[in-house]
Length: 374
Image (tube, rainbow, N blue to C red; front, side, top):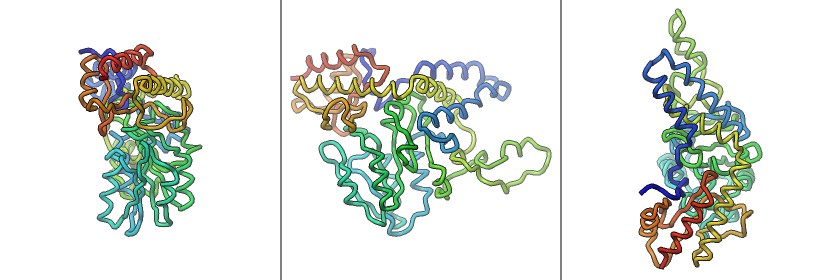
């Protein structure tokens, strides 16, 4: 059945029309002709870099592109020079992509502290309680994938600074829906796939590394294009030299050839988002989420995270709940049968509208819930 209401941007965002159009043009007018027409698409990566830097209020030199969130997290987990006794802070019920790469460090003598989940979220006092002078890094998700709880990243950074710890952020459930100023919120690293709230192509994502942290990533993979002068070297008449310095920018981690068509699509969707402005996008996303919470409350259902109202700082674009009378997976299947697309992570029904979601889609979800709820 065709979706009548698409409310699963936390699972898989719909590819935005500008991205689809740009990618179709690249596939039809560039790729079949090889190097003859490649100049039409090579501009896209640097354009996307500049746009993403603007969205995050940082320098383009601190932005790199990766295939997905996991790759970005691994760049940090595998790149730092770990010592036995280093401690990493993890968060209970976080998504595996922001847990497993860190747990692998146990073989290097790294130890772990866990922040418990309470009432669907994480409390700053619980984070403060596990921090010690041995804490090397806090690995935190800006928004929890299942409950939708949004943590105060500025407060996390302040706590980290007290013990000299780094902060690595999984932002896949916020970037594209909520504003994030990385100058005001001084995280050290950030990773986010583009296929959710950014509405970009699969296999594209962003990695941010604060400029003064780049040299900490000593074992990151560097493809041939990650070196200064590499492109020019292969075109010259002289002998090849392999003694080239690494690029002094986050782009050094991007490796060699990349998904040209995907990057064209990402550049297009980022341009659309920048034109709208996240200060325009976020209020509508949060208003949709508030309407969902109110509607669920009228049905006798409670969201997985408590909210004090539309301006509650822990709100995000995700509203999750469970229905005592119906298994969550069965409820999601019933909604899908009615043309309402949501998802079911960690046993919860997850509803995630975007800026592009219409009021009619929200109304249809609530009406359908009223009809199928026992």
